[in-house]
Length: 246
Image 1 (tube, rainbow, N blue to C red):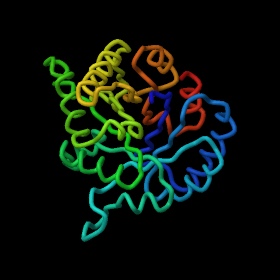
Image 2 (cartoon, rainbow, N blue to C red):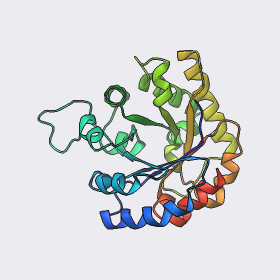
Image 3 (tube, rainbow, N blue to C red):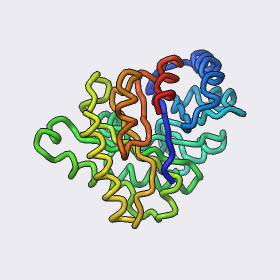
């Protein structure tokens, strides 16, 4: 079911004390929000975030997960490990994981399956490079990523999945896709999912230098259900301002 969602991706930022301060500052100001609010925090902050978000309307996610249950995988964290401390969401396939850690579409698909198997809700990221957009290959790229990421899943699985369209050239650059370009890309994602599963009833977010100044115009578009927010999610005030626009 489509729902309004604002998710924050803190990336490699924020210590436990910062996390507690952030939640204490945000929570009283978003109690009445109609949006589902998610903060995706570093592994070392998860326990604190989950503890301090209990009884609030703020949900907590991790930023990555491995596709095996256990084994000799130094530095990795399994879906079971995340679930046992009540992590609810997990980001999978972010462009930074694909770029810096060589994650392929096949790896993304394996992680999605493992997350769902263990009761985690994936936030699956897709997006094109500037070169691909300039060559007119943006839609081809993102629909291919979607098809591969969702391979082997069922229509029922979609109920616990969020898609985030994040053009790689707009992440952390200050550049934002125009609202029309973002909506067109998300429409194409919906169409591909409908072709694959017979429904397009899934929450799809836009991500890429989303801030209070541009949030409202993005959220007015027909197919954008909210945002995956990077830098602007590190301050409770700017994150709240984005939440208020949705």
